[in-house]
Amino acid sequence: MKHFTLDPHMVAAFGGAFYPTGHSMVMFPDAEDASRVGHQLIENGFSGDEVYLIPPKTLLAQISPTVRDADNPLPSAGTDGATVRAYTKLARDGHTGLLVKTENRAAAERLMEVVRTVPYSIAERYCRLVIEDL
Image (tube, rainbow, N blue to C red; front, side):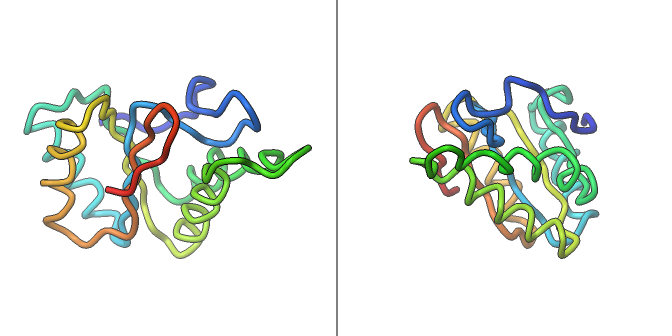
């Protein structure tokens, strides 16, 4: 499992909000649950290079600022800015994120089988043109 560092490919071309196409983001109220799920995913076939643990402090420092200009000069046509604001609120309440590469529906389902074993607060999959609730 890797520690998260925002990559330029993880932001939308228009507006610059966090939008890691081909990944899913899950937020957990308990950091230990997030870490445990991350390790279980690796044990169940996900690559350690495809699972990122995102502590609240990191999310607030790297992901939250991506929405600063997302609605300039025009309001965003999508939900990417609103989704980042939801992550920001959760991070301020101490929730920890897990970003996992899920390029297809089967990978997202494998992810959620493990995630659903513990309480989680939000789970979103970033597809090419839509953010999908998991």
